[in-house]
Image (cartoon, rainbow, N blue to C red; front, top):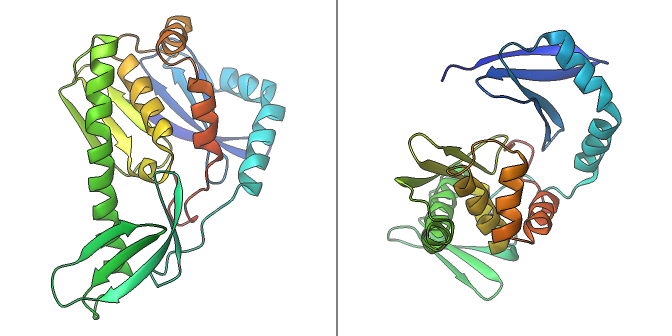
Length: 241
């Protein structure tokens, strides 16, 4: 499916328009800086998008204000004493010299990063990201299995990657879902919500009444999990969603 993208300015605010094969207009405001994105059917004009955005302008400004005041992690220096998150918990990083291969262990309130002394901050961060990826995959596998059975669907694949605007995506045709790597830092129920959300797209592709009904039936507290996810500390602004 081909996608057309471009940007217009509305009330002094950049708005990203994505035209694709969908039935309804979807407007979203995304962290970390309140970027406005509107996904629309191909036939919808810019004037129609402009009217829709203006009609939601007060709501958009409120969402952007929330992101401005939301807690944000400091720039990662990968040194002892730095704060990092894992499954919703806050940890202190401890960096120790190690002659062998890099090792990372979470114990108590500490994540210990054992690395060769010559590795710089970027290399240390890459090692931590690889460990985070493994942790998220380990968490996701049983959750995907649980909810495939509950929903009566079957995936071909579940992958992990960094994403700028979404916590997860679903390719219903390929029966594949992607999870945002940053989920590993959030509470487990947040990851579970995203997995359920994406799996429901295998039943209903659009965010319509049927989609909401399925979520309500299988995960009644999904709204609270979604709100907890969006209220969690944002990554440093150099790493945006």
